[in-house]
Amino acid sequence: MRRPHLPLLLVGAALAMEGRPRVARAESSAPVEAPGASDPATAGPAPLLVPIGETLATQLVMMEWSRHVMRPYWSDVTLRSVERNLRGGWELDGDPFWANQVGHVYQGTFPYIAARSSGYGFWASAPFAFAGSALWEVAGETQPPSVNDQVTTTLSGIVIGEILYRFAGALRAEGGAWNDLFASILAPVGALNHQLVGTSQIVQPPQSSWQLALGGLAYSGPEPPGGPTLPYLGLSFTYGLPWSPALALEQPFDHFTVEASTSTSRSPIATVFARGLVAGATFGSEESRGLYGAFLSYDVDTPPGHRFSTSAIGFGASAGTALASGVRVDWDAVASAVVLGAGGTSPAQYPDGRDYRFGPGEQALVAVRIHAGDRATAGISLRQYLLFVASGGSGSESLLRTSASATLRLVGRTGIGVEVTRYDRDAEVSGDRLRQADSLVRMFVFAG
Image (cartoon, rainbow, N blue to C red):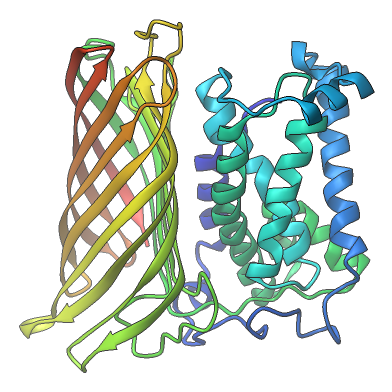
């Protein structure tokens, strides 16, 4: 199965919503559906057979596409291979990074959205991502079932699935043929259920903010050496502003953030940082407001020469404080347990020929942004990752990502900006230390 380009998909979602300030700034604080239940346009969720049937159908379509079009070695599934997988053990597979850390994430959104768009709530839909992944691991491939696929497809598939579902619902709330088309692209199974079982899937978004960026990217590091400036496309989206007095946290993902970018190169340079609040509360006073609680997150970052991706569960807070003269300071702090992550180099430097290694671990985020009214912003963020390797030899994978950025609004919603990101990687491979430092510089125009 070809890898879907999640950064492009998420950027496309924002492009579909660009120019619609009601979606980005609406004061409604929560989706119209009741917590954990169903679409308001129906008396209740659709029969359970609807999302079950759609999950089976999507798995079958992907299996037949793999068997007859892509034709990889693992697609010749038989009853004997299914029986072998049911009787055998689970393992950490050796599939390519992009298939495991991006392709399986997108695959996990289909069964999740099948249930979500049938009128089921967040928690009732989550098991569909798990079951759909398990079905694929046992009956969708001839190779032994994979622990890493099961974890990543489930956890990160839920994160991206809920975000796509809410993007699509916000577009449907706007109304119109074009919005409905874009919503159908973001959530195809949702479009099917919109017609099949009559769920409206309308989600009235809370007060939110977005920024689309287009510009150039330059790389400085050991692999490859320098090089020309590459085109760059980026998106940042905060759904449910933590400092908004109208924000009501009634359901999982009433607040989430997405940062996504992509740039063309021999080895794709892409990032997705997605984080959603699954349980929490608001706090603060008139001058300072925020939220805290438990988060689910999916991160992937692939600068030249190395790559990192995690599925994590954490606890943290986000807030904004209004200072004098229209100045506001926003901050985020989240510490997470990495259920399973992948990190490594490209080309491969490990004994088994892999270009990445799996393992559990921990990660942390600290970010501060200063806003001078609506005119200018400046910020710094630190993302730290540590994996304890469970495949590809012993050791660890550690990455510190430090980013500083500034933007200046010139006319209306448009302006210019710059972001400088430094990566410090420290890996232990069978007793040997591998250290690497490199940087990316992005210069762009933006709207938002």
